[in-house]
Every structure is written in C-alpha cells, then in structure tokens.
Length: 65
Image 1 (cartoon, rainbow, N blue to C red):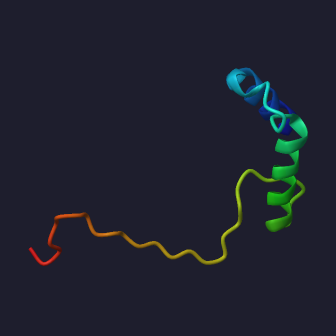
Image 2 (cartoon, one colour):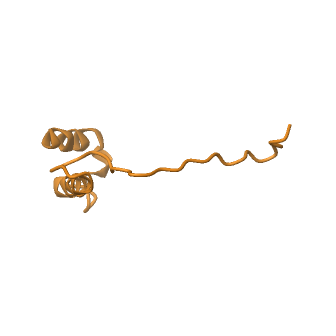
C-alpha cells in the first residue's frame, strides 16, 4: 500500500519531481517515523494522546453580543 501511495504522489505532483527531496525514500521515512509513534511498522498520521482545541475570536466581533 505504501509503494502505491508513493507512486500516486509522483503521478499527481509532477511539478515537484525535479526537487531533490521529492523521492520515495523521503515518503517511506515519514511513514516509518509515524509508525514508530503509534507502534506500527508504517502509518499515515501521527498518534495524539491528548489534544486541546480552541477557537480564536474573529476580528471585529464582540463575543458578548
């Protein structure tokens, strides 16, 4: 599955192909690092044990209204 995803990245982001960092090793390395964080071989996202979200006030809007 990882190889297929890397192939698709190369297919759909042709404008990046000439960049020195844009290769399969980079994407596999990122997936491996994410896997270490969630105790898997490879993963697509980071594991978050605790997450706090907040909403920033909109400029010019009084939250009391």
